[in-house]
Amino acid sequence: MHPELLPVAHGVPPSDAFLALKEFHPAGRGPWSGVSDTDWNDWRWQLKNRITTLEQLEAYLPNLSPSERAGATLARSKLAMAITPHFFNLIDPNDPMCPIRWQVVPRVEETRTASWEMSDPCGEDSHSPVPGLVHRYPDRVLFLVTDRCAAYCRYCTRSRLVSNAAGYDFHPEFDRQIAYIEEHREIRDVLLSGGDPLLFNDEKLEYLLSRIRAIKHVEFLRIGTRIPVFLPQRITPELCAMLKQFHPLFMSIHSNHPRELTTEVRDALGRLADAGIPLGNQSVLLKNVNDSEDALKAHVQKLLMCRVRPYYLYQCDLIQGSSHLRSEVSRGLELIKSLRGFTTGYAVPQFVVDAPGGGGKVPLNPDTILGTTEGVVTVENYEGKVFEYPEGGRNGQQIGEI
Image (cartoon, rainbow, N blue to C red; front, side, top):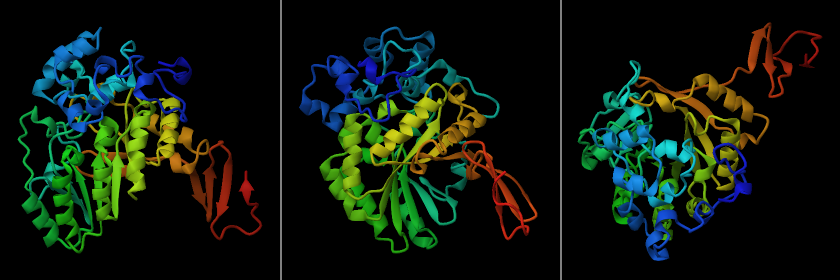
């Protein structure tokens, strides 16, 4: 690694530093240094060569902790383990607190469930009128297309469903899902998620998008995906040209730490942006990953350089076995406050909690309104200075800082 590019705790690069994989591994691709460019840049090769077993993990990541070793063994009965070579190469093998490692390497703590944790913390199953479709908000639906991902985040909200390790036996029924949308004219917004829709080949994804786009009252489409970060090789010119047919089409990616935004990821996101697709990022606030001011600020600023607008910062859902990764709501509020006024407003995401049991997203904001009296609103700015804003207020009242 280049130490001058990684000056902050746990490898937080400056927001203007885009690191190629060769800058993480002197050999170029770590354990895969002998792989040809043709294979490495083939997204199907990346999927075929994912790390999915304890034996592979031990071979590629020496000095596993007892917690990680036990977690990799038990993952077969909960949320499966799968890590693409691209993403695995971002792990610092000498740092047990590496923020990439914490996101994708299982730990035995995942088997410990607090009394307040749930298998379906967002209440999706209770808002599912047909298999694979969630209709929780009046004018939009979540269209689940698959239970597979390129890699599996250990804090996954849908860990009950994805990978089928827990035996959920998820089977979307596209005809029934589409028929429901056709019958409900109030639906104007369809979000494709899963699992990850971009795991489909171009032909299958085009077929599904075409069927939904043919519904006249559907105004725009969205895709939720972590593929550009886990598997940037999938974002081919052919895929981008196909997606371009379905505007207005928006895409929400998922990145949590600045190290994830390599040159390969930046270029993949650039291809999507060049295809006219507005890009937003949804992060999850995670302990030991992005719950520091250095990590969060570098990340949001680097996202903007990738032409991605930081959109949401989620409080980690109450998914079973996630306590070791969950930071406090109060910490999230402190972090948002640390951004406001100290970086562009475009870089400040909305901090939200998905209300447990199906209440939907609730914005969480640092307190800036100190009070309202006699038509005067008292506010505090990012420097801690207090100001009064009169709403048709008191005659002769001095306006401004107090």
